[in-house]
Length: 240
Image 1 (cartoon, one colour):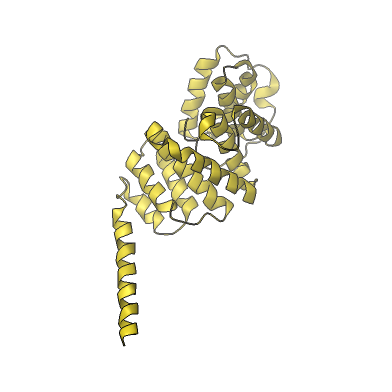
Image 2 (image 1 turned 90 degrees about the horizontal axis):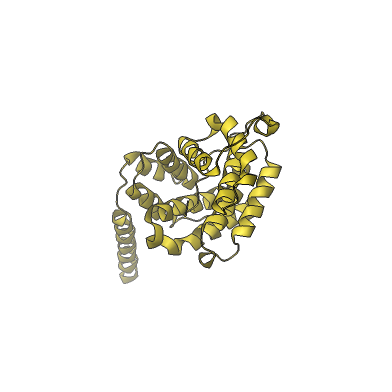
């Protein structure tokens, strides 16, 4: 009988602990995130957050809420690992140096997603890693630097020339590394296919065009690959 009471008490304590953990996560600004979170699908939660970000409606509270949810979940599929990397990156993006220690977590989960399935969402994890390696200080990373990042983005754009986001990220990398001339054909391609880009990526393109200087987009580079492949959400890295 005592043993049974012990088990019941232990179960009650466990339930109380789970409840306390759930209650400790501050509710998101947008309740729809909590609705998606209850489904247990990390990628769906990441996509819901990205939709808010793309429309400029998200808050830091939304990002932290999503992070607190996914950081406690397993990431044993390419989709789940990518989602955790993307959401963590968004927290770092919002909090800056206050969340700098999470940059290595973004790298770890993006590498895991790429290891599990490098083709997931047209190389979404590779795009994330490449941009992260270019943008983040090398001291925060363990497996790459700006040269590695540029190589990853170049290879991805070569293998996926019809994906506008590949060209946009590569152009962003060149400009961030103070080498705008090689970015020009990729900016031209992005400009020709900007309707396929998310609203926030269209704003990024506008900023990159301002930094790059005058372009000559009369060359066929802007229309060499008329087919546009949808890429889905590929959250920018933490330091963008």
